[in-house]
Every structure is written in structure tokens, then in C-alpha cells.
Image (cartoon, rainbow, N blue to C red):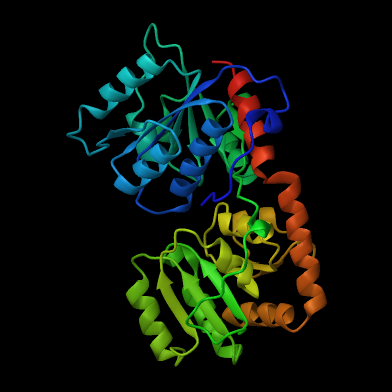
Length: 362
């Protein structure tokens, strides 16, 4: 999703840049927030002077994007119990590459990370974007959470605080991208926007039901997943087929985010809510439900609004409040932008990763 050129490492890294090799291992799905951020981080670190080895499950488009950024990904199977080769190939690749640190992204990658042996010099860390089963991370000496809530939870499970680290996500600066309204909406029509996997946890059914109380407004839900048929049926039952659209997965939604009237995150369960950071970057008003990630990111009436979980009527009321109050919409949009600039820019997060990787002790 990074569409602009990334400045040189001297502009980003505030300490003197030391040689650093880092390997990122993932066995993720074709689409998803963690998978997209994996790509963005690998490409950004490489563009800013680090030596990066991506090790990933075979995925043609992802591999092509990484290669286009000058990287040489290693594709492996990451299969089931009968896969006896992936761990061996990871160990061989890490010994040949000799990174300072190897990052296992999510459970399956952590499961396949090799147990350290004599002569293995790298430090293994697991990167978590949710409240995962920590038994998969037994070969990791450190864990990374992309929210403070996740890091607190890891410590509560018995991990020593000095081995648990908070490293947030970054998103690109969307204000440099022109707004691109959906071509299927009337020209100039205001619309709500939600993005994510079409999954029960994302709460899109709540948002659709909220649309019953918000007349004459359009809703666009960008994403794909197992709940598509159920959501389409709900849209028909609520007689909303002329106002609610499911255009599918969009690889580069930045222009769409810039064009929306309000960005909505209606999740039932959301450890982070990367889309909220994108709304902050785009300087759009953000409304979210009170899942753990959104409540960590949003200070009500300062950089967004929070609505209770599982309450479509309250969500409709909150959205209407923003839509009918331009001063409030501008206030929270500008507040979100300030939050982005302070904590979630590319420069801030790359520096945090660099400090982590260069100062970490085994």
C-alpha cells in the first residue's frame, strides 16, 4: 500500500546507522492486515538501508511485490504435521543469512521457527497482532505486541517484562493522495466507509443494521471473506441494496479513505484496528466500537468517537452526530491526524524497530 518513494535511511534513523540484518518469517493468508503490514515493513526497512530476508508461505503476488522492492524472498510450504522440511529450510536460510534477529509473525511461523542450536547466533522474537496461543512461541526469546494491551496481556501470562516489547504499526501519509470517490455512487454523495475481512468479528452486520436509522446515506464495506453471503442477505432483508455496497477486496484503498465522510470500525473483537490508523493518517473522522484496540487508540471527542459493542442504534446515533456536526467532524479528524504524526508515521515506527533490533539482548 506504500505508493510514495521512501526517503533515505539518513533521514529516518536518528542514531548512527549500523549494519543490521533482520529476517521476517510469515505463513499468513492471501489477504489480511498483518500480511499487508509484513510487506510494508520488509520493504520500508530494506529501502532504509537494512538487510532484510523475507521468508514466507508461497504466494505469487506477495513475492512479486517484495521482489519489485529489491528483496529476495524465500518461499516455503508451511504445511501441516507432515511438513518436515520447512523448519529445516528456515534454519539453513538463517545460518546462511546470519541475521541479528529473526521475527516470527503469528502462530504458524512461530511453530516452524527452529529451536536454537549451538552455533546459531540470531535472536528469535515472535510478533503478535492479537491475543494468540503463546504455546506456539516456545522457541522465541522475546515477544512483540503491536498494542500496549497485547503486551500487558503477554506479561500477565507469565512472560518477563524485559522480554516483551511494544512496536506499533505505521501507515503511509494518506494526505498526499487525492480523494477517489467510488464510481458507482452519485457524484459528490457523502458515504460511510468500513474496511476489513468479511468476518463475524468485524461487526459489519451491526453497521448494516445501523443504516436503517441513517436515511439517504451510502455505505461502502471494502473486503472479502466468509461472511459475504450472510451480509448480502442481510442487506436484502433490510431493503438497503440501493445504499450499501460490498465491492470486494481493494489493494490500495487510500483514495477511497480520503474521500469518505466517516471511517467506521464496528468490530466486536479488534486487537488493534489498523484501519483506524489509516483514518487518522487521511485526516478523516473515525467512529469505532469499544473493542480493545479502538479504545486504546481513540480518546473520545479528541481524535474519534467510541460506540458501545453490539448496539446498532447507538452506533447510528454516534454516526449521525458526526455527520450533522461539521465542527465535531473536523475536530476529531484533526485530532486523529495529530495522533498519527506523533506515534504512527513511517519514521517513528522504523526508528522504534531499529532501536529494538540493535539493542536487544539474547
